[in-house]
Image 1 (cartoon, rainbow, N blue to C red):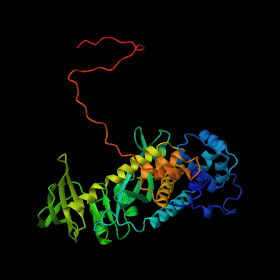
Image 2 (cartoon, helix red, strand yellow):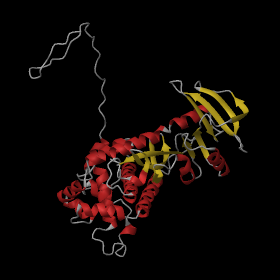
Image 3 (cartoon, helix red, strand yellow):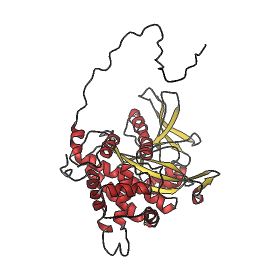
Image 4 (cartoon, rainbow, N blue to C red):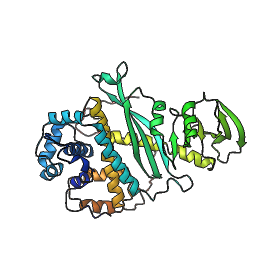
Length: 395
């Protein structure tokens, strides 16, 4: 485990890991009562500890002088925070996020992906965040204003993943339109759903040598070149095909899930078995779990601003908070899942850092479980007590 966790309060140690060196220059903060570095620390702490309002932020910092010292603030007002989060250049917050990603990448450098043969994956998808009616700049349809977070999630093992690129947008930007900006890179297989593989995008990926496994819609016409005998019972077809006017053949796999639903996949991974291709696509659900988790546990649906720049900043700060938790997990070499580790981190935030050691090293007690007992034939109703009003129910 990392020996950086010591006597200092854990939340202070966590915030000290933020790469804010470029923001601490006096010229950068000239005539600012609240520096950009302090502002980012305040909002990161709010994401980590579920601070529910600007007033809640003020109360927390007044209650913890040690935290106030780490933040570099003696006091501030909620209106000041509200104004500054809208003024803060998103490029600065984005740069901090990518520095966090770089740190996670260096700590996971030895990870081999799902398996040695499959290698690392990059799952691409987007999630929508609904906005209040006052956010007319994000109008989609009547009663629906929203923004999107286009995300690329790196899967470095079967139980560890992290976002390495995100692109915020208004809600009308489709997955297809975001593809050229987020599907890029080498030595990784991209996994996408049906919103990304248009004919144009597929041709672009092949021209750029992109490795992919993607689900396609039924209206994409395929021309069979060669057929293979499926080796997995769920696979219906395993073929080499051309699509439309494509110049380069790809692999087509069609399979049914446990409920009988059909899936059509295109891939460039000719080197894998059909079972391995299915395993890759099944791991696409990791990004769905990530979206669900980040909205629930980082309170991503609680908005600090209704202005575009404030919302973009909050998106990146939420991901920065998640990234700090992952860095802690990797440095402590904890075997807990990222989600469980984040829960433990939140529990110990305002205790000395060394206190988290005992919880991370605690072993679960083994139990044989509750022993089965015969169920009596007669139905036993629970005791209703003497307080509640009861009316006899007649069948």
